[in-house]
Length: 512
Image (tube, rainbow, N blue to C red; front, side, top):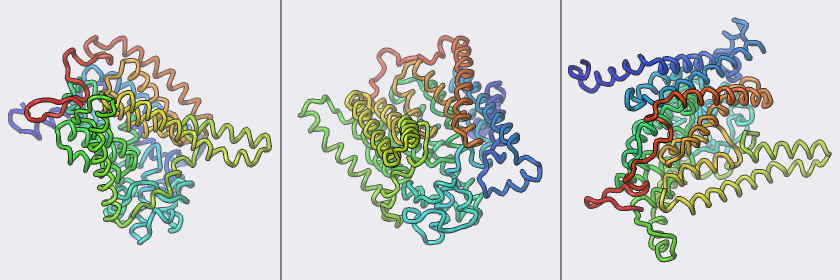
């Protein structure tokens, strides 16, 4: 009825109403509402939050309140994960993926940033720019006050590692928020929503261009709880970077070569890891035939053109913003804390061992050594993935190369995994791989919930381990109950176009 009389807006409203009638969508909405409520707890608020006086007045500033808030948040994460898995057979076919995400995101839109205080750092960087200071040269601590007090204690004393466009956007949002420190942090969600919107709109379309199942892509890439909680709830600038990378991939498969280069350059101006997307952009539609010397030499000018174009756009943005390339001095900032990255944990354990043995000098150099080893391991794996997949399956390369850097680099945060995880459905991954990705999602989200609340790695890891076991049992249960036609291991139909063969030119399709 709505579609017949109301046009596109009525059709969208009908899709929203159809989505909210489904029990899994309602379950996920309850989960995100609990997340929004939990974000108001002292367990998750920064020191200078305007909610602190109210929390103290209500007697919620206690260990018990923090523990209860953590349990509630972990329960909310579990609800979202279960709802996500239960929607697998229906999403995109029986219910619009964007409508599901709209309901799940709704409670988080005006909530304080959750699972991370990075949005408060963005606001502090914008405040520095408002006062004529360069965040690449000074830290938020040089301007004492609420903006600085909201920032996590370590990042309060470090320069910004982000791209110049990200800092400029933060400056604009601080002005838009009327220089209010808290609203400035919440406003950082606006560019994140732009990035998420690009992912939601374009990912199923890319799947169609590649001859893959858009339902599988819509389920895993656009309503993933990691995307809901970290990109929307956490308001990370990774969302805008990733959305622009997805736009670049879409444009490359449509044959819009220069637009794709521009999109990657702008994405790199938000966050530098976007540069990796230049490689598949160069490959798609290139006709690169083999690794033989002559074929590589034919491909090389195109690769240099893409890299030069992307770096040129990045340099242009850096100059136009007036911020230059000061981020080079802050590339080591993300690795300054202990995270769940394997080499970060190993370096921390080795440093503690050296300290216990009284080897002060060895303990001092261990973090730098661990960081170096992590970079060698990450780039080595990326090179291996490149040799195996870049020429024939460029999106598979992008997915696994991003994951290799996120996992084996110097720092691992749950939102880093989204760089590659978003593209996993386009990499023709197996059912086991996506189930494993779902388990990793649950572990990192639960770890984030506990770690931010108690600042206690041992407690958070224990909670994550228990949650992972429970979620694994739930996923196995729903896997057995899912209709055969909607299982995760649906593959590309026989005769589908090759992953790299999708750029229409002169009425035909050419392979990479």
